[in-house]
Image (cartoon, rainbow, N blue to C red; front, side, top):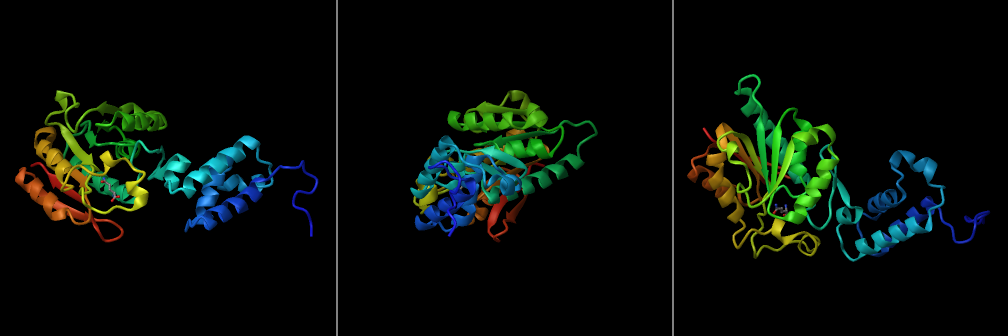
Length: 302
Ligand code: GLN
């Protein structure tokens, strides 16, 4: 049998060997997707992406990078979500910084952005040439929704608001990674509509939000409850409190024909529809996610 360490200084290890070791540690620790997660963690620690792997897997890892990988695996094994351990996660076209200051960007929210962009496009069809669109993202967190709108639609002014200064720091870092499109994004600290400049009153084309919507007594997965910021998940006893605030301000801030798009929990469509209708919004529609669960409510100010 050949010695895998043949001809190498003692104590050294290649990235390929570390991958095998990492996957085994994760699997022994009960991580279901050990294979995929092991690869992500090794890619993050090594700086080798999938395309560089074939050439790089026989490279020796430095002690410092091995220590970093060990630390990441330890964190994962005590239950920290892999997205936080990696420190970044893909959302639509973006590679977002994410840590415990913000909610993990979720695939369901990528679909809410799809709904919001479609609704925005419809609003803009009725606007005159040269109209400069304005979008507000309430409770922007990591900036996932606000920055996606800026990245995917040209010439839109985007305002992201969050009551958490910590979350805004993450959003600001993500904004820094956006390049040119980032010049049209402004991030404001405060509660819902409060920090918006009053010139925006009555001219907003789209208000979008993924607010906290989990009821106080709702059981959450430990991976969510133990790690993600409670303030981004639970607005109050019923889970509907944030919608009350968002919907009641929408009439004042939206332009004629402007739309409100909110992410919802699977059982909240009727309640949010009622809030929107009571606030005088109309054309209320409910949109399901890829799992077939109600995930977004759209309402128009006419
Ligand atoms: N979708 C999240 C969850 O159920 C909740 C997100 C939110 O409250 N905005 O874990």
